[in-house]
Every structure is written in structure tokens, then in C-alpha cells.
Image (cartoon, rainbow, N blue to C red; front, side, top):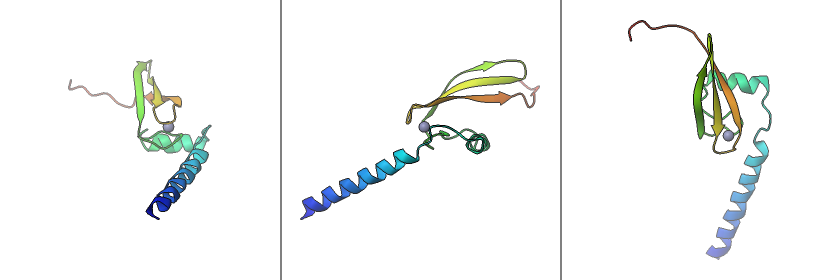
Length: 90
Ligand SMILES: [Zn+2]
């Protein structure tokens, strides 16, 4: 009896997993991008997981770009930083 209930649980888990995969974004809307920026880039803008890794930051005049990668959904994108202030005490 307990064996069957475990099988039921597994099916339930699979169903949930399938739903999660369906909800994962393949493209980002302007709203998704804004949400990501406002959150400080803490979680993946595609799948919402925390497993985000950043490559080295490439700096230019007044802005910088950093290639980001999500180890969860394997999507990548660029974070863009702008120069906002300077600090004189080094
Ligand atoms: Zn992701």
C-alpha cells in the first residue's frame, strides 16, 4: 500500500516539474528586464533561480558589461553597468 502511494508522489513530482519547465521563459519582455535590473540581478531573469555566474567585467568609458550565465537553465545574457559615482578615499 505504502509502495503505491510513493509512486503517486513521484508522478505528482513529475507533474510539478513539467509545469515548471513550461513556465520557463525563452525570451524576455521589457518588463522582465526591468524586474531583473530592479532586483539587482540577484536571480536568473529566465528561470528565477539563484545559480547565476558572472564572467569578467569589461569596462568602457562610462559603462561596463559583464556576461552572465545561469547554471540552472543554461541561458546567458549581458549585465550592463553605468558609472554613477566616484570615491576618492582609496
Ligand atoms: Zn536560469
